[in-house]
Picture 1 (spheres, rainbow, N blue to C red):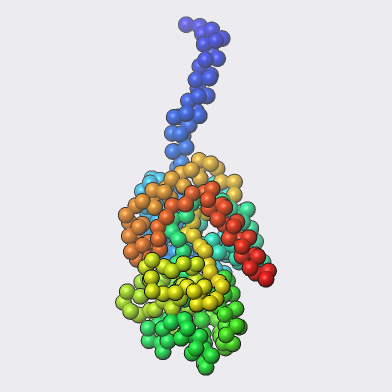
Picture 2: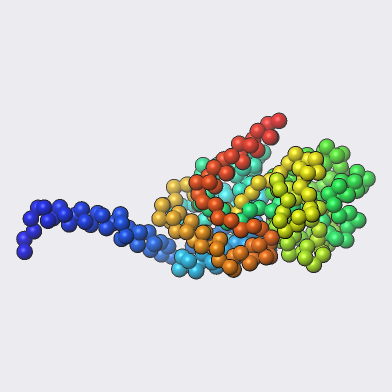
Length: 315
């Protein structure tokens, strides 16, 4: 039967409607069609790596494609961000990690990326930034570390430019003779602390593997508020030092990543935030509160923290 012009127009409109309705949704849900890569900016064995590997497994369940983990340590994850900024994989390569390499590192050193080079899809855990020491040291609290340092040279293991800058400022104020030892992450920090090769160190969460056994002690938190998992440990702010680190473990992609990829990654992150396997490793093993913070709020958070940090550093 020959169709009239009206029938042809109606069919065309119906087809367009289907593409923007349920069929369009179905097409978006076809993504991904091949394996993905999760980049982690620290060496294996630290809290970001431990969380990321379980997160990758849970996202793989949701997305129906393998999510392979690749570690790119260096400069507090600045190396990983530099590589991601130049990636054109349209969402198939994304980063999981904290945000201090964006909110602080570019302020104090030259990097090959900026905040607007990325999109911040979802945060799934709140950072727990701590100062730790071995239980076998002659000090346990941060005040005791400072008192010891006023009488003896000290060594400190850093992981990021931000924690190093904070400790350097405190050392200067307190008159400490302090040597900084760089590490590639929590996996590198832990043996230095446990072997007493350094006096104290920054931990982004690796301490949770050693505090239950009594091998490692948390002397203070760099977070703005006390950790719910260590309620008796004070923050630096409570101890009289006006420094804190606000950080989020976030899924990050290059700017301009296709919408269908972003939508699916955000959905996978929300799924992971409710998955028992991810909750168990994040809250039960690394002692990070699990959250789900969507893209709009995370875009605001990153820029707000960056602006506040620039103001503090300008003083």
